[in-house]
Image (cartoon, rainbow, N blue to C red; front, top):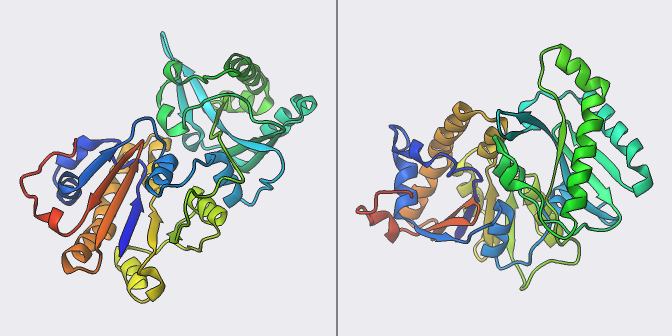
Length: 332
């Protein structure tokens, strides 16, 4: 039985694993077989590992959010703060901006009014998660929001044949948002402005399923829920910890020949919020609630293989024999 645990953001601060209290995480990552595939997102890393065809991130999350993905094509269009430093322009995710639902609705309404002639529709699902539905897919290559959050945007600008036009659109949107009464109020109240949109998540959508038949069970939500729906595979609520997950696998004979895929994404959202303390807290919790019982299951033979997919093309494979490689110390 194989367990595949997807933990985006786990390697964001690898030096932390040298601190007291993170020994098990350090040990497992060091003793595993590590594989690297450059320039991948967390989604494309999992798809590559499962030998599945590429699928748009925006399509998967839109599918999970209950949007009509059969109409037009979809991009993620998440609200951000663009903050100028002395020489650079930094990007901060909307997850750290405390955006109110009514504020988001008003801004989306204004964008839809401005771009209605283009046949575009901006859609707000949560105050921090927006989409753009448009008739055809632009020829752009974007960077996922987690790659640029908290960093200068210069190295993460849109690329591709349509990139020049979309950079003009970016500038238009910045002016629209800056002038809106929502941002004028936020500025008067000393709050960060919502003065930009980060377009990302483009790619192939419906019709791209699998390069081979897949037998898998999924636990989690968000894009993983969308992937399960796309592949017409079961999706279940995330268990409270690894012990409960292992119990559910052992009690169901249907799991024996299937990939069992679980998404833990609290670290990802802590990074988007720019909260390093919260990230360390979640990392500590994951070690106790998930990695410890999964290590025990490997030792006891209840789990034949554990795969940890951490994002950006990194994954780690562990079996019981790997746990004895005591001479391997470093994560990186």
